[in-house]
Image (cartoon, rainbow, N blue to C red; front, side, top):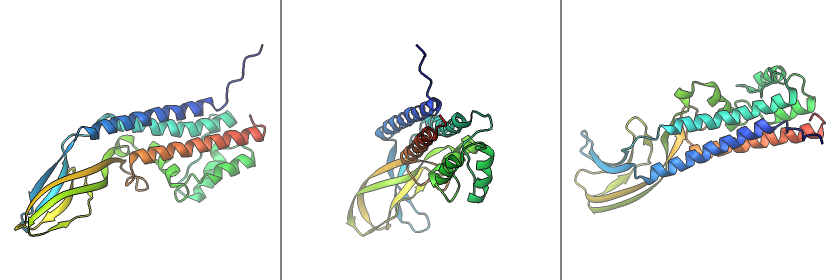
Length: 249
């Protein structure tokens, strides 16, 4: 009895499963980190005005593993796309095409997908894997083609919510739109007049983002990684379905 033929897209699907494993690991470690209360409230005096500035400051470093986990996840997802094209052509040059512009993409798809049927090329072009097309897809490729240690750096750049518990005993206080200061690892919440008497307990919800690429760096790393995975899995499934319908595999 003949053995069952191996799925031509096995490598792509395996890479996606590995990416999902890394992403779940990232989420677990992130939850554990923020559950450890890694920040504190404090008040700093503005030497110029005498105002008191209520702040929240990170007092523990982000886990070192964050960078490596994200590195592994995005590379698994990028590899899944290349492996899918290789499955269709079985040629060393075969890779999923990316470009910084739509015009450059036309050249990239001819070079990296040479030999594919026009229907498959049209499908790949519909995914818009270039800047100005699918922003998440382009960002995924950018992460994999840039110095990883300069770009894949998870950092607290997203402040999702501030719950102020401040009681003004005398005077007034002005709230500040919270924006994370990555150099000081802190966020300002209130500016309080020097004559104001108050009590404050600020609760803040922080999140982690991937820095270095404007298209994604103000979004939660979880959301970005989930969108990367959704997009790559959708592409691989559609490539496989079309290849079957066209009799390529």
